Image 1 (cartoon, rainbow, N blue to C red):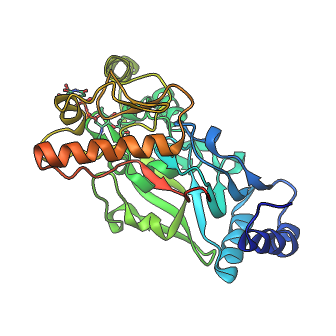
Image 2: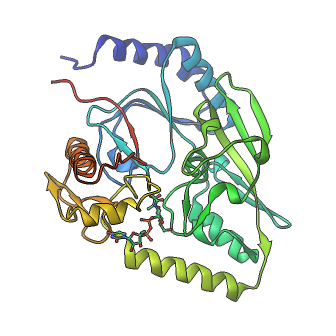
Length: 316
Ligand code: EPU
């Protein structure tokens, strides 16, 4: 007997009949695709429908299908800042992992990068091109699309410090080129990408000597390895509040090492939850609640999650 709900069956039927025949053979199309291993935290249920388009044309087909059928759509980056609930994701999950979205092209002091390009690859290509400013990207386990959406940052720098212009697609499948100065950004947020899909960006650096770039990269790398855990995690769980960095707060609350099921507050850095014993999303969510409650009760601080929490609770 099928355990799918009526809505899931209807989506599968519509996607197979109306969407799949319109997609090119290079586009990956999968029903009920497990997602946990596509995230760095390694928890969460499947996507109803998972698609890796091979072109902007096929991405537009998917967006138009979603708009016409009222199907929710979620973009998946490298899943490094993501907590998917155990019931998985209703609707369509799209990832821009195809080679047509991961290109990095050098043009003077500019890098034209696809949204699927890994940040580490961008940092390394910039180094080879003797461009500075990209060093902080080296240790962020994401891709450019996710970094634009979150204005990801590290080591005092943020993604939009580098962006000159952005190529994106709206929900109707239209492509836009937008100057970075016309896109408002905040700490760890860029609302423009709530309703636009990042396709790529032009990033600008400054010429520098190889040794200078290497010294910066190595210093970042050392700081990261010394202060952040290597076990599976979703990076920092909470945004920093002006009063105190969240890692220090969790540390002062005595919560490092606190555990629920397979999820544990890192003993290395208080703002990381690591999955060291086959955690479920529920374990992680309960641990987040425990930390929030203690921060509120003992210090009057309302912690806000930085990790993106998505998907459904499992049906009982
Ligand atoms: N601290 C403690 N105990 C801890 C952890 C930190 O006392 O367990 C103290 C540190 O000693 C330091 C302060 O808290 O004085 C801040 O810690 P850290 O330098 O590690 O930086 P952070 O503010 O915790 C931020 C970003 C990280 C980024 C690092 C390095 C946020 C929420 N986090 O961390 O980003 O990698 O700086 O630049 O802004 C992420 O986005 O997922 C992420 C990990």
